[in-house]
Structures are given as C-alpha cells and as structure tokens.
Image (cartoon, rainbow, N blue to C red; front, side, top):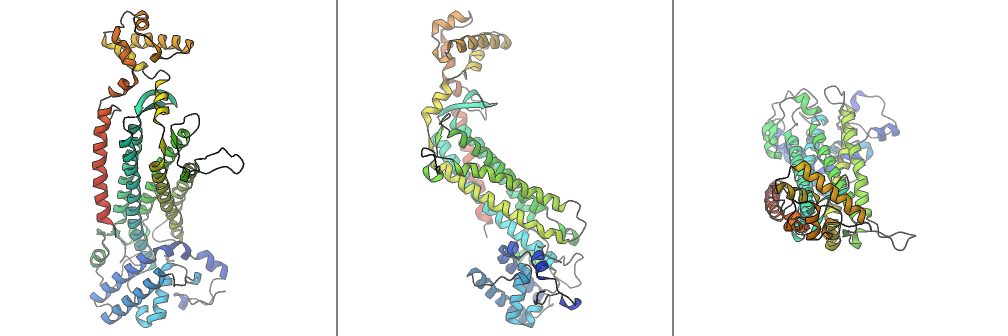
Length: 471
Ligand code: ARG
C-alpha cells in the first residue's frame, strides 16, 4: 500500500496497492506535456482572478509558484514520483507543497478531464508545427536533388518492369508531392486540435462564472468547445494527427524501398553515403542501407499506433473514461517515429551519390521507346492498334536477336514496314522520348522545370505558415 495522500483521499479508507498505483499511473507517458500543463494552469488562474473567483494575490502566488516548477523541470531538477499518478497532479502537488493554501485553489472550476484534454491539444498543436518543419526540410532536400539532376534520364517502371523513360527529377518530385499532402494533413490535425476544452470541467460545465474566451485568447486557441461532454471525450484531433503520421510513414516507406532497390548491385542507381550505411560483422564487402530499412520497418509500428487508438476509442460511452489515458503513448510514439524517419530520410537524400550513367544505361536498354515508335506510325495515318501490332512484332524479333530499338539502323526501319520513313530512327532516341512528354505534369524537360517552379512556391507558402505558428 502506498502512503502518498491522494487528492480524492477524503472519500476513501484504503489506498490502492503499490502495484495498482503503478498500473494506474500515466506519469511516465504524460510528463512530456509538463510545459503545456503549466501554461494552461497559469491561464486558468489568471481567468479565475479576473472573474473574482480567487483573489489576485492567490493568482500571483500560483503563477510565481508555477514558474518555479517550470524552471525546476526545465533544469532537470524536478523529481517525478509515480505516486502522483500523472503530470497534472505531480505539478499541482509540487505547487501546493511550495505555496500552501493558494495552490489548493488552482483546481477550482476545473477537472483533470478538461485539463488533460487541454494539455494534449496544446501538445498536438506544437507537434504538428514541428512535424511540418521536418517535412519541409525533406521537401527542400528533394527539391534540391531534383533540381541538380533534373535532366538525368532513368527508367520508369510499372509492375516493376521497365515502362517508359522518365527524368530523375520527375521521379523525386513525385515524393515531394506526397509530402506536400502530408503537410495538408498535419495542418488539418493542427486545426482539429485548436479548440479549447478547458471550462468543461468533469463533463457538465461548472457553476462558477468562468470566462472561457479569455482562456482561449490567452492560450492562442481559435475557438471554444461548444459542448462540455464532447470536449472532455473528443480525441479526433489525436486520431487526425496519428493518421497524418501514419500516411507520412507509409510515404517514407515507399521511398525507402526505392532507395534500397536503387542501391543494390543489380540497379546501382545510387550509392548511399557511408554515414547512412552500415557494414556486416562477417562479410567484409557489405554496405547495407540500414536506415532506409529501419524506417521502412518502423512504419509497421506507426500503423499499429493508429490502430490501437481507433480500437481504444471504439464503443466508448460519454464522457471521460479511464480507457482514454491509453490515448497518448501510441500517438506520441507515432509523432516521434515520424519525426525521426523524416530526419533520417532528409539525411539520406541530401548525401546520396547519384550514378547518372547507370540510370541512363538502364533507360537505353530494353524497349522503352516502343510507345513512341507506335505513336510515330500513328502520325503517318496508321490506326493505333495496327501500329501497336507492328512495333510488337519488331520487339519480339529484336528480343530474339538480343538487340534493342537503339541498335536499329535507318535501313532496318525502312525494311520493317512501308510506313516508316528515314526519320523513324529519331523517335527511339531516349532523350527525345522524354522531352516530348510536355503534357502538364508529364516528365518532359520543360514540364519538369515548370513543376519545379510550382513546387518551390508551394514550399515557400508552407514555410511561412510554419514560422507563423511556431510557439
Ligand atoms: N491521466 C489521466 C489521463 O491521461 C488524466 C485524467 C484523469 N481523470 C480522471 N478522472 N481519472 O487521461
């Protein structure tokens, strides 16, 4: 049995066992919300004084006491005790130990139910802004490499079979746009969290004449929650943020997969920097893309975090239930894992060596100009289905001979079909194949240069938002 006095001690004759005290505690998970808890309490105390619910003298004492607690936690001097159960009670108990009676007035017109919802929302807002910052750094790295190598031709794949040549810059920009949508999702999660729950008290509101708008303004919330029962039991903002992290990790895992493939001896498109590779304890020749593999693997954890949160919330009746204490561990893990994954990926992208020759050679092998050769025949008036057939037969013949379209002479084209003229050979030039794809969003050199401009503008807008929302 634990000796620590509980805030609800009045009604109880026995305390939980030491095991149950551990079992019921969330302090080790929610302690990271200490700064949000203190800021929220200061805003609450100021509001109570402004409304004449507590005296200004008490509010001043509370504020300076909380500032001391802030200092002791940020300097690593604070002693976290499991007996306090969670960060809210740890801070309030420490404050009351310090300043006495006034500390006992802080919890007027408030419950831990609206307090934990407040702290979690504030934490999520900060986390969303931080994550957007990391996403933007990775977007910037991708833009940089895409710009630098924008004219490099590589094979594009469907079904993991060589399909049509694309520009390396175009391929990288595909990931840039996935990450741009991640920013949109993170901003949505920020907005979902930007509603003040404090003032809902346990579930039904309070008898005190509080001013919720004042607290919202003090803490920078966009709106006040309109229903106290919803406010204490809503965790949609946490789902939104965890979902944004999950989709973001899925995006990273796809890029990881390509980096891993590209750095195989078989592909050889990139060489990972030594600082982002590891060796083998037995095979001296090995250079493994461990950090790409690890990030790909960690994606599974984050999918689990989202699933856990959804299942915990499923079927929960109104209003607060202790089940909800389980909401933070997975969400925090998703936030941390996505942030780390983004940092690792930013490093891998900005340090990798791009083997442009190997990429080009890969694009020249195979039959990736076949569609363009058929399009050439269409230009002479031949129906596309017939053109497809002519080129298909040519591919089959060349394949048997172990040759490619690039090995064909002008005479061989003329001999293949009467529709071919001397200029047919130009349509299989791999640079031409790429350059002709000038449709908006296509891989043509000019289209990619346009795309780079649009991408750069989008990043500048998102960077401005992030700076304006940093605490
Ligand atoms: N540690 C709790 C949580 O994370 C705080 C709210 C507890 N409220 C209560 N009435 N037990 O959800």
